[in-house]
Image (tube, rainbow, N blue to C red):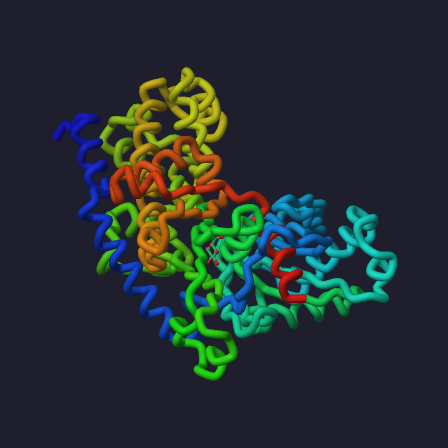
Length: 463
Ligand code: BGC
């Protein structure tokens, strides 16, 4: 049977489209998971993880503090100068995580981190530290922003869980994160102590609050996705009553929701491409929500859809370009380029494709245009899912009724910041959900340096 581009496109679009009535069960599902997570003790892979951070910055704090930010791609060690009035200056050492380090031993990994700390203190930012701190006579304190699940037991302690993002270190799972740092610092003769561990979402929330003290959500929309918000300690019933009792009534604690691991087949509208991606992943059934929407996965979803168009003879003359058959061979940054190029002549994307894959017959501008349309449906769904998570975080805190003020969300991450039109699409989805009046009160503000500034602020608040 001959199928036309438009007919197949309609079929695929139907699989990705998320009208309001399909978003509602997702928001309800998230709200239910918030409730369950608040009462389920954080053992092993958990959600709604208490950060033990109960203070937010005022914007007036000053001083120089050190932070470490480990994400899926880079390690950054920073000396952060808090200048007051919401201003900061960051001097940092940044290193990419090499393929060898990703699958090596914990000891090698933490030694590599300790070397980078030494590089910052002895070289890059030496002038920012006191001579006694540089010589090791005086202890330097470090706030660690760790963008991986941790079973946090205190503000400066937590058990390392499964890491994800392509990092699988031996001899780390189940170990205390702070101990692993301190052992490496000892091996290198460094007088450095970790005094706070925080998830990147908590970092984004605190960092944004330094500039904008009414911030109520820290949202990361990058390679992975996740969010943090302040919850009343009395609602975090998973904490022992004795722990809850230590805080004055009404105290709020920042919670790392780990919304990335929320969701199951019962309320996430997983389509056949989501299921194919999950089945081919080295951690199936893990982070189902994140796999539908974050930067690590959008390219692969697009590739899987494109393969169906190729098979139907509608794309690339019906031949799979050599290299394109490889899972994960189509990175999300190519999608960004395609969507960005759409306003130009699309030649640049054509060139990129031709230099990446081997074509028997050269692709045409029509091929590029069809690829761009596929990217658009995959990324638009991602924006709607991001909005659904934001809606759930707003509802959980009753922010619309709590005050007349604008609702401030600190947004951080490459997918949100650099994917073309992503910001607008997330806004549009919020407008579809709430209507103009309410959605105009929601301010999605980009927060920069969430990890380093957030880490430094928490190190300071905890010293
Ligand atoms: C991790 C979270 C992190 C998020 C954003 C997820 O894959 O599990 O801990 O906050 O990515 O970086």
